[in-house]
Image 1 (tube, one colour):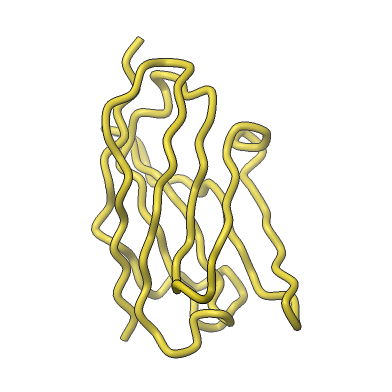
Image 2 (cartoon, rainbow, N blue to C red):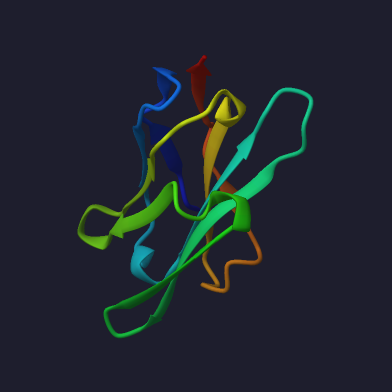
Length: 123
């Protein structure tokens, strides 16, 4: 069982930045694929970014095309944590942000989800 707890959400003005954190339990966190998603009111949940283990100490990051350039995913395996740095925020970024874990490492079977953290961007 993997537990995920997000934090760092809040209210920010357009153009501002936020850094979301996700603390994970799990004995083999370093091998998990970890992802960030978001869901805005009335919309489906959408993929933001994923970090996957490529072997050794190398991790691969990938992003939804619309998120490239403003959002950065990172992880700290020593802390079993994954982060999402969000810059140049826009009102359209307002959503509940979730982290997710895939123990297979593939980043395609998201078994575990956090409870979400609200991000509100004011204009």
